[in-house]
Image 1: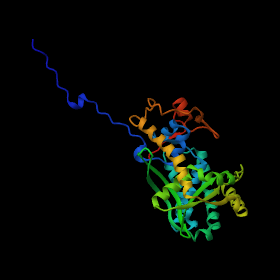
Image 2 (image 1 turned 90 degrees about the horizontal axis):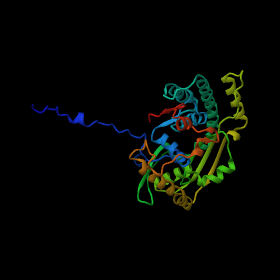
Image 3 (image 1 turned 90 degrees about the vertical axis):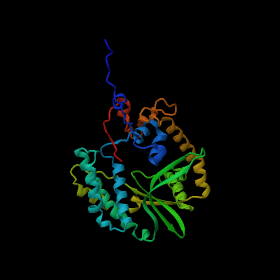
Image 4 (image 1 turned 60 degrees about the vertical axis):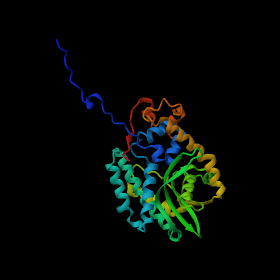
Length: 336
């Protein structure tokens, strides 16, 4: 009896094709941002969940949404537009984008978002009026400009640094970076003392200096206070916003503050050598150790989860349920 012939398998049948899952961002190719570095210093696993897997908090985040909406208004008038047009051109579209986003809002959050954007409108209009005489003389070089600057580490490796400058202007031939911040609480003494060490401020100053090839004189730290007033149960949004506007008109110095801080060349050099380079060298080594499989990084001795980072001063971290229960409650995957 002859041997039974077996059907020869095709290459496609023999080798199962696999599509390798790509990380949301690749540290070596895409570089790092301030937000990533800030999170990575707190906890490498939570930074990986955000940067590699693309997880982000869902729902309404009042400080974040307030800041983003206010920055959109700043960008609008930076193009020479009138502050009177921000509702129709900026805030209404912002509301529509949030409603259409994968990051869905609950009904109570939708109401809160309407209140938040109405507050941004009156606060921004008063802000624009308050600084109208001052800001018209600024000789802007950049306004709301994204950057990507390659930084060579002491090891010889290159790390791209990414971010967005709020504004860069020239005054008396000197270059200044303008940093716009919206804050609920303002510690004037702490801000002034910490700026020469602040990760975001110094990172942006360094990248600006490297990009322009010129000395940056310092930073104009522009702070807008988020109103601390709360809406009463029987108060309509319009009534509440009118009350906020009255308070801003009465106390503009309470809501709008600016500090100018100068930097010597050695201030920036010392910060790069003592803070930036050591941090980035560790980030690069960490990434090289997990890049072959960033979705299962636990074979790397450089990757770990910081147990203390599960709780912040505001309560549970945004990744608490994902880490402790493997649940994605309160999270969604970013698309870009």
